[in-house]
Length: 311
Ligand SMILES: NC(=O)C1=CN([C@@H]2O[C@H](COP(=O)(O)OP(=O)(O)OC[C@H]3O[C@@H](n4cnc5c(N)ncnc54)[C@H](OP(=O)(O)O)[C@@H]3O)[C@@H](O)[C@H]2O)C=CC1
Ligand SMILES: CCCCCCCCCCCCCCCC(=O)OCC(=O)COP(=O)(O)O
Figure 1 (cartoon, rainbow, N blue to C red):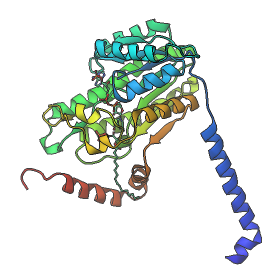
Figure 2 (figure 1 turned 60 degrees about the horizontal axis):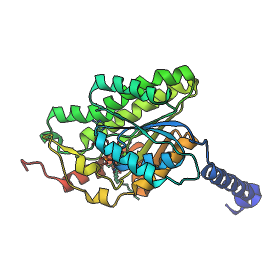
Figure 3 (figure 1 turned 45 degrees about the horizontal axis):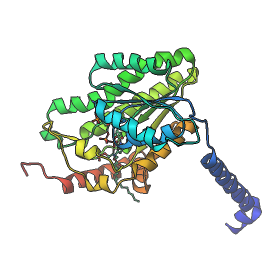
Figure 4 (figure 1 turned 90 degrees about the vertical axis):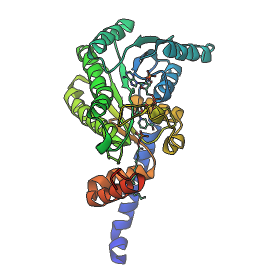
């Protein structure tokens, strides 16, 4: 070993580590493209992460099109944004709003036309809207599995495909999707949600490869728990609202910090970003490198968390 290291290997290893560190620091410091004046569309902008993304992109000078189901709540967001930056040094724009439900295929097409009418183009589409689910597969109605898929997957895909042709024509644009760590690993009692996020990851990975030739990047962002109303709004196996702030959600990241990371990912045109702590990151690697252990841990979690009725 001594001979190995003494024989010129040590300087080589140290230089390599140094170069790698320098590269990581440069990547970290890279600011990337500006979003000043860019037309940024955000779905699910009336609350949680979507609302914080609206705040962050508005402050960065983007021309926003905020999407949601509730006109008055979106208008409230617009008022908050314009009031908070009334004396900003940088030029900011009053956001436009488009109201539609992602689960209604016809209205999504019409909404896409309305979105395009706002500024004549879309530079960044941030697919953020989504719902979660809590339930045991044995007690979950199939309609619930479909409904979650309709919102998180088909709704997102429909809007993306409706806006994509205009981006391809201009050879310009950027598609972003807020997936989840659960798009990479599946945990018990989240079947509908994890399945919808796995499908999302797969679709946008395909899309990235297919549209790179048009200079349109695709960014998949996979956060861990964020402090929002996601668990409150989650559906259960019988379709009713879960209505509880889970501990995991309450102790999750501040949505303002996650929104800043979304802005960074857009500026740097990142392809795939996991925004989570060490354990979820390790779990993602474990699922690939040592699946048997990962499945054992998940089975044990399932048993601890909930007992099926017949036991
Ligand atoms: N919070 C977390 O721990 C994590 C969240 N995420 C993801 O972040 C994204 C944002 O969720 P978050 O902010 O946490 O949760 P919220 O429940 O606060 O926000 C969800 C947003 O999605 C909108 N939405 C839901 N269903 C529809 C629909 N059918 N049509 C149109 N809009 C709809 C809601 O609009 P409305 O106001 O009309 O209900 C709401 O604005 C989701 O995709 C979620 O999966 C990912 C990882 C972790
Ligand atoms: C250092 C040793 C680590 C060993 C790894 C063991 C595996 C541990 C399992 C970890 C599971 C992490 C799950 C993370 C889930 C998550 O962050 O989901 C984000 C969401 O989308 C939240 O939605 P929800 O509706 O579930 O609140």
